[in-house]
Image (tube, rainbow, N blue to C red; front, side, top):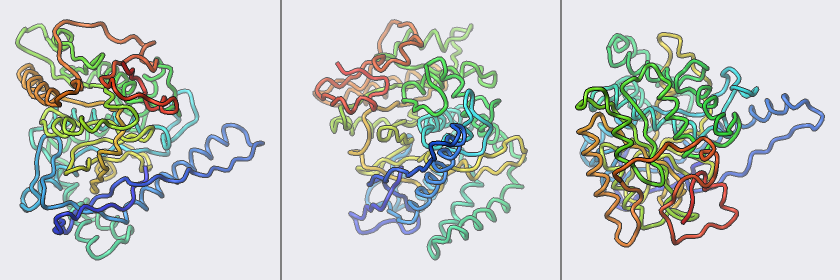
Length: 453
């Protein structure tokens, strides 16, 4: 993904110190030169290195053009609204965005299962956005309401002050490091910071991490996937469900995946109920949907906006075909997202004081709704039974507001068996709600696991 300049100056009064980049162009393909007589493993390593360098270079380049938020309309992000004319709201938005876990391509980790790959650059973006969706759910599950990461905020504020007078990447890195050194020591002993680090470590790039790239690739084998393959949003949902079920660290959390765009209430009850009838496990609900043919149906844009306004929504995995992004909010006609396509060095999380900056992003980015691919997975989180009932009521009202359109998905009584592994790998395993649009044959790869009726 290579964002380029876009602006939103409709009111003529943009914010003066917070900017983000939009996705309005297509990159030329990377040029890779490999001699035919080179051994296959050397070719693979060279391709991986070139892909890593290219991803990093185009991502850094895209930071130079800066679009700005408009003060004339609110920003909505994961159940919260922010009035950018209000300084307190603007500060809170900075804190909240910088506190989201940012999980990107990495390089330099141990080879992935069944391969010699030491980076996921160029193919692992959906796995990374899936990690970000799960990470948002884990933050809600384990951290107190309204938690924000103070260390990242100090670094962000210093960077923003610097960027007013300088575009130097070297100075930016230096200031960010100083902010970390000033604040890190005082926060390491705090229980919430320890929990924060623990969650980050679960996504580390080594084989023992519960939700790291090695574990996800290993779990994807049963779906016919291997390291280097492209993983679709629905397939990644099933991999995340297995990863959470196998984790000994989260006995009170389960993942439910909607089938046929339907959340079966009896299945949710069976999954969440504990021996005590009034004690539920927390649940992350993942809903794979397809909201149109080749493009997002305009009738569903309002519905997507309203879902992102819900406190129970933990984000959307989407983007463009084979270029997945993690959508967390919107302003006017632009989605806000975290981009996984920046390739960073792997971090050794076994070190007690491992640096956290690369797991948090200080630059919000935007993309027009018209550029959103219709294949996506929407995530929700409910702490317990009462929260699930509230979630059900709020989501039902939201998805039923589009007049003349089929609901994105529904809640239904009853139960349905889990999707078999064979159907996970099939491109015809999940019902799609879009009846009117027809896909051209060349768009088949973007369908992932969806069926048109």
